[in-house]
Image 1 (cartoon, rainbow, N blue to C red):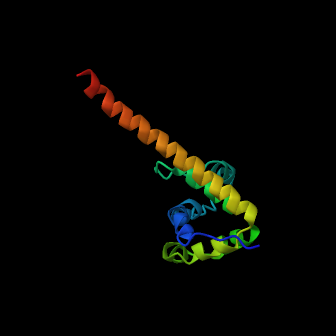
Image 2: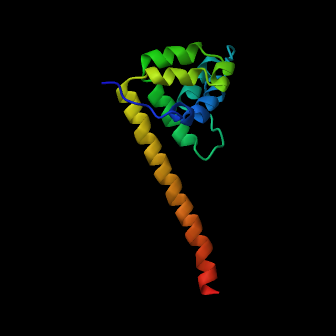
Length: 128
């Protein structure tokens, strides 16, 4: 039984996919091969508030062999244009479920941050 994907669902992952080009496009320095191991363990910080979420999405997407092949073959223009997001329709159900759970966790985290910010703004006005 095919699962129905909401019409805009592939575009929810477009911002993380756009960041893939920055994360995965690391220049190769052939003069220093001993530093390669260090670079492989450390991912560059994008400076975004959702950097951890982005990394987790990338890690989950890379567990799908078909999507990983398409990702490696894609260029920055494919990612920016949304062409690569069409491949999300073909990821396994297990990957889709993991992505949904990651999204729920991130939305929950953002809601808690927003609530804390709103509470912090209301506290001074209640006392003064």
